[in-house]
Amino acid sequence: MVNLSILLAKQVGLVIMLGFVLVNIPAFRRMLLVPTLRNRVGLTIIFAIFAVIANYTAILITPDNRIITKPLLLSIPHGYSIANIRILTVTVAGIVGGPAVGGSVGLIAGLSRAAQESFIPEALFYIPSSALIGLLAGCFYDKRQQRFSPLETGNGFIIGLLMELIQMTFILFFSPTGWTLVHFIAVPMILISSLGTSVFLSIIRLFFQQEMAAQAEQTRAVLNLALSTLPVFRHGFTAAAAQTVVHLINQYTSFDAVSITDRHRILAFEGVGSDHHRVDQPISTALSFRAMEEGTVAVAENSHEIGCQHRNCPLQSAVVVPLIVNGDTIGTLKLYFAQRWRLTPVEIQLGTGIGQILATQIMLGEASYQTELLRDVEIKSLQSQVNPHFFFNAINTIVAVMRQDQGEARRLLLSLSTYFRDNLMGARQTLIPLSQEYEHVQAYLALEQARFPDKYTVHFSDFPAAALIPPFSIQVLVENAIRHAFGQRKHGNRVTVTITKLGDQLKISVTDNGHGIDPALLPKLGKQVVASEKGSGTALQNLNERLHGLYDPHTGLEIQTGPGGTTVTMRLPYQLKQSTTRAERMTTDETPDR
Image (cartoon, rainbow, N blue to C red; front, side, top):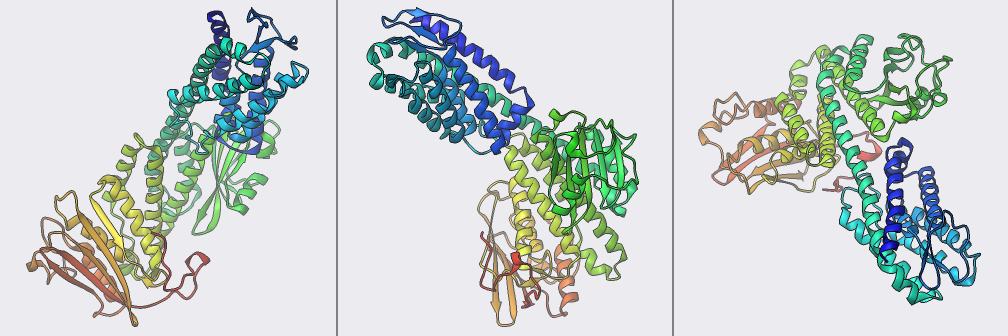
């Protein structure tokens, strides 16, 4: 039994070494990360080869339980048996590829094992048993990209143990030498296979942790890039701004070449291939036109897919991200590598994120430029105010969360993107649907509650989603309550937003259970700057002035306060958007999911 354990351990060591080599091959990494049919077929082929090799390099066992070692077992004499690590490879295949991969590898492994005994009836049970084990192992497959983060070494050991026990059960009931064989091989095979499964999965888990660390590093690069490019497009989407951004992307990332185009020509290019990828040249590649026409990220995994007409172009892989501003594609961001293997899912994700940030920056620049041209400066400036302290607090919060939970950090980045997108859209609009204002408030709350977990509870009543209100009106009142109503109180802080249709009016009330407002300040709030330790009242003054400008001097804020809290109320004319998109087409009784 000891000799059998040592021989099996040698086989496991070889498989583990091969596994370590595999996870360092970019093509295998892509198979693990991207669950396409092509990659699933690739995983099936790789693990099926492992399983067949395990059969042909098995340890031969005589009817009287003696061990015979041979370099290659293409056939097994009648009455003889073998010990191998076939079930280990089938188990790992199921866990990393899912039931389809595991079942397919198990079926091939079982057919190979039965073929070694010329498909005699006594050996046919290996076919269904191996396929079943692959399918069962596939039940532990997680479709999430971070699927190995919860799979600890101990879990891998237990899964391997269960699968080997299933195989031993089949041998016990269907093999002619059932009990004798199981008694001799069960302990070594179960122990060694379980250990091998846990080690193999630990190697893959380590790879996924490295991928997550790489994504976190890429996210930090994107944040730094976002801060650096913030003022670049202030004067529009120009060639000079594009060249500055291309240089910054080249500085903060590992891409070999970076380019920005408009819909017709190259605005900026830097990096490998700059001898023939020149500024002001017309766009000539089908890849770029496809990205712009479809509005989706286009990926080229070889020079042919890139479509460069230059004979000696060194660029071998690329990701092309359409720059979409206000629903229109205005150009592309193109990121290149000089080697095919360097374009991994992490790099594609990075490029997509950078493209989205640039589109937001361009939108910000255009909004800023248009604001300068507007005659109605007073209302537009009030709508387009963005608190820089909030921006940098949000960035710092995301950076801190990133160290503990990359998934939560991505969610907060999306909330930050939504918050600023709604700010930019609101700066151009006089009235927006309530559904859009609700989305803006939720994005703000997600960022605030990440900074102060469990400190606030904000509840919205049902509301007519298509009703029109001034942008930021509810957000200002909710933010004002969160910042000033509760003082240093850390728990039990509640804000309730109640929206009611009263005839031809829309009543909006924001109520908190805070400490109340000094009655002496009430006559001044919303009308002038108020000097106090908690704030200046500027936000309420701005909102009040906007309401007066949009409606009439009698439409403004009503404030009621006491020791148990404060209620701020707006009464607006009830209006519905006349032309709505399909996503916004709701009746006044419909409300978004909350």
